[in-house]
Length: 304
Image 1 (cartoon, helix red, strand yellow):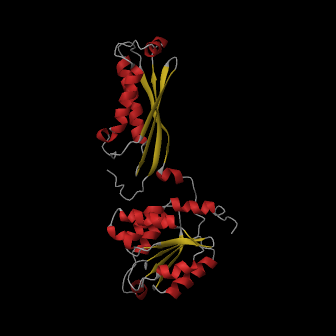
Image 2: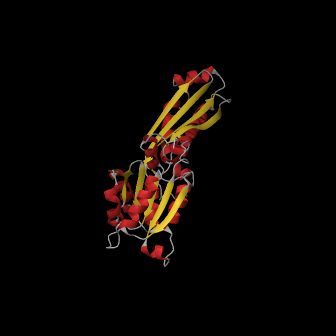
Image 3: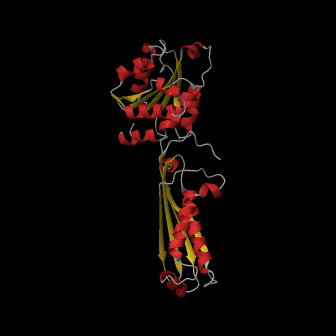
């Protein structure tokens, strides 16, 4: 199965559709009158659909087991066909479109099985996904390429050339996957005055997003929060909490990080851990949803 351990848990919804065609209006009447020899077609088919949705991972090899928190099955009987709509919801790391389509398929197949003794022309004509919501699909049509982005590596050893940067590079790689271009990539020592002057310079250049990595720990040399907090006009505790919460689910040491997020004017500042894993997980924790902030702040500032 695909690795989904890096994904965040969100509300996921999918709606699937299926059509069962019948050979005559008499078949529809037999369904509505509950005179089909094999039993109550609509009730049995809906029940089969519920079981199918919950057991999708037992049938489709690459589907993850997940908590199904809602399944709704609607059926409309027309003169020559039955239209089936299955809605599935979960709060999880991956979507439920296959679950919805599996449910719709089994509802249709159950109807076919129950109706074939009385109608030799029954057929399943359509099974398709109508729409889904949650996860990356919510951001697919949003363009963030206009944002000016900078990454700053705060590390004495990397700045001195005794250690290679990996955390800054992984941040750049992850941001590129969201359509962002890092136009400024800088390595500086973890010193309060240097950090502050770098941030103020980028803010004066109307940089939209500045991400720092390093200096958020608890050693005496870690001073990135001390440098940033006096400069911030508004902190965003929710983003800081989301980063630590996501990390805490993966390592108990995440609680020791002092990630800081806030605005200086309209420039979003994010100070992330200096470890490669910590930096990568912090991006996974809040992107791309954090980019919604730039829609709140006067769109994308096209006029600049």
